[in-house]
Length: 41
Image 1 (cartoon, rainbow, N blue to C red):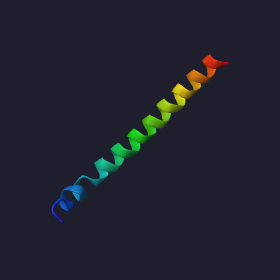
Image 2 (cartoon, rainbow, N blue to C red):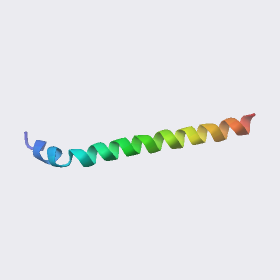
Image 3 (tube, one colour):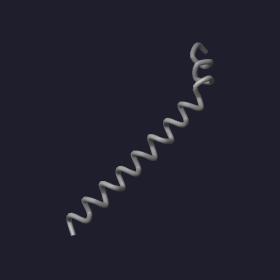
Image 4 (cartoon, rainbow, N blue to C red):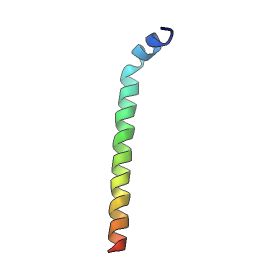
């Protein structure tokens, strides 16, 4: 199709940014959970 060449050329950057953003979201979510759990105890 029309954009497959663009996606193929940028696949590594797309995958890397997806993995990094997922890891950051998981880390921040865990940190916030720990902070709120300690405050409630």
